[in-house]
Structure formats: structure tokens, C-alpha cells
Amino acid sequence: MNTRQSFLSVILSVILFLMSGCGAVGNNTISAVTPLPTAADAPSVPTQPQPMPTASAVVAEAPAATPAPTPTPLDLNLPAGSALAAARATDIAVRPIPRNPMTFDAFPVKLRFDEFYDGYNVRTGLILSDKLLSLDGQQVVIEGYMAPPLKAELDWFVLTRIQLAYCPFCSTAADWPDDIALVYLADSTIRPTERPMRLYGTLEVGPSIDPETGMLSLVRIYADKLELL
Image (tube, rainbow, N blue to C red; front, side):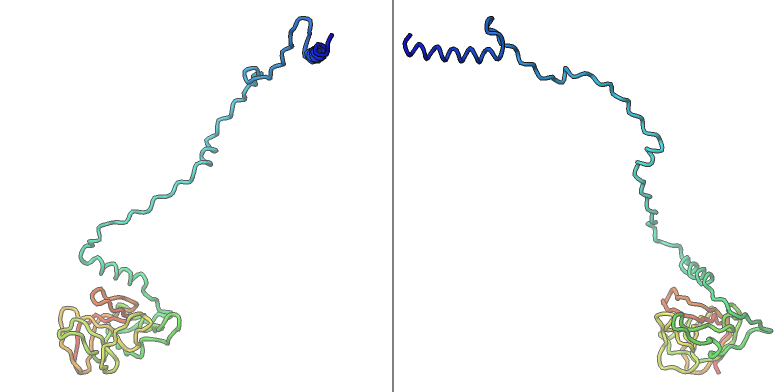
């Protein structure tokens, strides 16, 4: 045997040795490799039925409903006089009450400007007197001067304790002077005058805004009779 044949015999022996590790050599067969299990071969696992959620759980998990906003009326055309009626109803609801109510024997009751208030509070402003509050809605008589008016024919004016050179209009209750009253004439008008006057009428007390002029007042008199002195 030459060298080449010897080399081939060695290679053949190695190949036969390697093949003997995978299976029988005599019948020239190779054992099949064990296949990996597939999803179809996996044993079936019985599934557990899922419990249905109860009504309380459904309610608890449901998001809270957002309340609908209150609708705003679009019609702003109020009937004539409704604003004045609302203002008067508000005045009655917040009408101040006297600390020590006073009674009177006869009407009209004479009232002076220095009897309007009992002092001043830095938080609430002027302190209405018990006499003024007790006369709310009652007939009074008072003397004073007409403040310089804004027009020639007057159906309302400002009555002051002393004669003034200007009209004391106010923006808030805290700015209201302590010696004036707003006077409304019932069914008549009056021309401006510098003479002192005496007037009779119904007293009204408490903060109020005039619907026509926007003027805020604390003391008002609805005059029935007016005399120049």
C-alpha cells in the first residue's frame, strides 16, 4: 500500500468513527434528532371563567358625570319698572334695624341733621342713629337748603344742613356726607332756590342707588309739601 492509499484509509477511519457517534454504522442510518415541542403539541390547559363585574363595581369604575351648567337667559328685555321693583325689594331686605327702637306720640316728627348719626366706624362708615332708623317709613318734617342743582326744573334735589356752592354727589356709602338728604318730589317740580326751606314727607333710610342718576344715598325723603322760609 502506497502512501496515498494509507492517507485515504486514515481519513476513512476518522469519518467512520464520527458517524458511529450518531447511530449504527452497519445499516448506514442516522438517528433523528428529537424535535422541539410546538404549540400544537402543548397540552391544553382548561381556562377558568372570568367573573362578571357586579353593578356596584361598574358604577364605581364609571367616571363621574360633569353637571351641566345652569343655562343663562338670553332675553335681557325686562318689563318696564322691574328694575325699580327689584331695587326696592332689595332695600326692604337689607333695611337696617335700630338698636333701641323709639316710639313717637305724633307725626310728622321734627328731624334735624345732627340727629341722623351716632358716630363713624372705620369699617362700616356712618352709624345710623336709633331715631333715624325708628323713623324709617314715617312722616317727618325737616329744614335745610337746596344744593346747587344740575338742571332748571327739579323733581329731585339734595337737601343740606348749610348752604353749599356745589352739589355733594357721592360714589359710595362711605363717602356719603353726614349732613345731607336726597329729596324726591311726588308729582311736581321746583325751580332752584337759595332760600332755606321746610319740607314734609316720608323718610327712607338705608343704602340705595337711584335707578335714573346712579347716585347712592343713605337718607331719602319723599316730599309731600315744601315751604320756602
